Image (tube, rainbow, N blue to C red):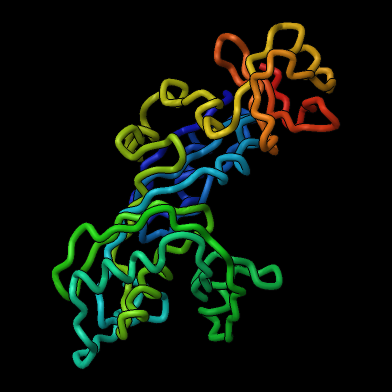
Length: 294
């Protein structure tokens, strides 16, 4: 098996829980699995699971943008930034207008700096930040730079508002909503989160947990190329495929790849659409970085 499963993770499941369901379906088979971006247990939506050799493509899937639908409640605060704990409500906080929220969203579009929440899966000295936080330890998570490609208000009826977000990997939607609220002189908690897209993997085409438990996984498996459609593509013939399998570099004789700027990676694809390798530039040629002997 070589490809990706586009799964619809239900709320209440951890990302690992869903991977374990697939692992049990494959019991007795030596098939490696890896998911492409953790979703909190309280969140639902697209969780992409790499199957077999496609697990080596996970870092490249991380390069793609993600879309979310997030719901927030203003004038509320909790230790986790969501409703895992009962929020504290503040009746004396200012009530922002829709125009003010939309203006704040514009300020948070583009390259921004975030401090991820203490209750997050980030590792601090080898341990998950949320484990340290639950032990009552003071957790200092270093800031990170993320990109918000687009950010818009879908609905606002005080104290609740909903956002549509397109962002880079590593963005904490909880933190984004809280930071927007703080810029308006109040606070917020995230009440719901749904991931609607990861790269080419969309919620509308995802598979629910019952389907994953009951139906043949092979029928749901998407080609490995689906995870790297953002990379430039070089069509390779049989001779070039053999060179890649042997670890030898290629020349871009037909000038299929851009040169200004030269991409860090490209996808070497057979004429039948099967991904043969991920290649990288080296001294005027393209050398194999991940080779798939399909």
